[in-house]
Image 1 (tube, rainbow, N blue to C red):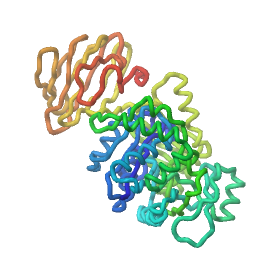
Image 2 (image 1 turned 90 degrees about the vertical axis):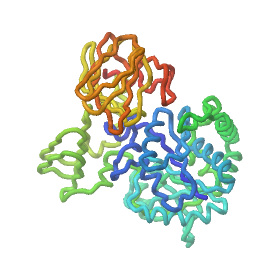
Image 3 (image 1 turned 180 degrees about the horizontal axis):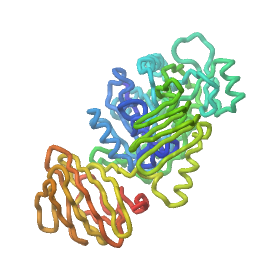
Image 4 (image 1 turned 30 degrees about the horizontal axis):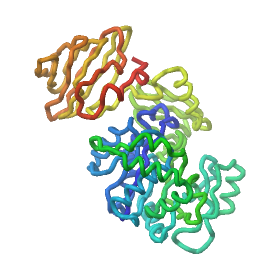
Length: 483
């Protein structure tokens, strides 16, 4: 049995401003019509004969669930990590869960959620080549056949035997300088480390027990103490936090004699920078890659990504230009990997543009701040059919709702009534209220908030369909400083 294990972590810094901490790149459609997470889930195709596992964090849980629902994969097991501890503990939790569910000889295909692969048939062929070795107990990794001396990836040196399947791993090499990378390319036998793995559950657990028994104990206790919460499996926080912060490579692959590598030549990219995204795009005759409403004149070798308005560029070369509703990035292609420096400065300044987009996803729909000022802000709210916000109250703000599409069911104190298109209602400070969409089409309304304090942590929840409460806000003052 082959169980896909999708690692859906990530901080959302390298592709800012399109990617944000609470909306990182795996949830974006960067290489096609589907998101990277969705593409990763579908990539194994018929090789995957067991329901997948997705391992992510709490603040992304509803994004994961919604994107799986769009694919019709609601049966996936979604494990929520209480804190980040890198990929080795995540793989260990997955192996323990797989052994319990499907037997100790279950095969796990571990894949980061934020990679792109052009040739999925070639990807599946590489997986098939690795399956025999994995069934025999090897820990198989996949090395991308390099096409240039890249200095942003680690390398793997495989044996030069004639085996068409998995080769013995002779060495893992840290990210090299350009001279060393060119030598690797000239010598041959070196592959980029893709961070994709295939192994039997018991083979991985055996090596973890030998090398890191403390990790195995922490993961087992965390899984045994896990609890179901709606569509999610929440790992027990205290034991999981005892895990060391180690990647799969550092924890095991560099210290085991079971490591094998299969060459992967499938148009792979980790989309680790804006320049990498340009490489997976379709360039025009002048080497430009564009997305959205873009007008170029006398420009070359430039990436322009427009989200909300027309972007024009005249007489430029070798630039990255990214426009979103609340931020614009202009960078030289050679400096594209340094975007996180800007993200760090935003965090230091106490701003919110590195955390959230202006349009924020919630389990019930979305809200977008369209104007704000002293003692007021205006939001566009969209509620999915059949969905409802929590029954809540605010200490410091009143709200006016104007319905522009659909029909709303409003609870206000002891009242419950419908508000149709072109009608409005008012929620005073301190009154319990709830907004619901009883219809079959999205409900859209304009909300005008007024009061002395407008932060999203001024919410006291009394009932909620999504397991949120006043002590675990997904909307916090920290993430809403723009308002």
